[in-house]
Length: 94
Image (tube, rainbow, N blue to C red; front, side, top):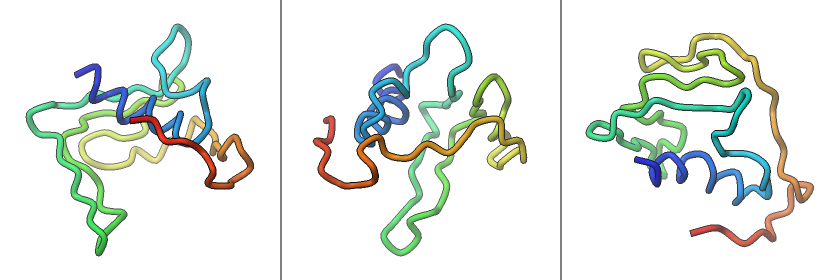
């Protein structure tokens, strides 16, 4: 479970050059509540924006932003851009 959550948060943050993001630490941090037996990535090359299933709730800054397989409409966070100015010369984390 810890590895799966890291892949969804920490690895994505590091791959975007955000080394100080994507970790659960004291204070407000994005968190999700997956059901490991039902998590499924439905995105395909034909439908790259298809949402995953099996993630019950996602919190950002202590507020639920995804619940019951849909957005809640709350937007407590802010958009983060790549730390390297948007270029794609980063080394991915495996």
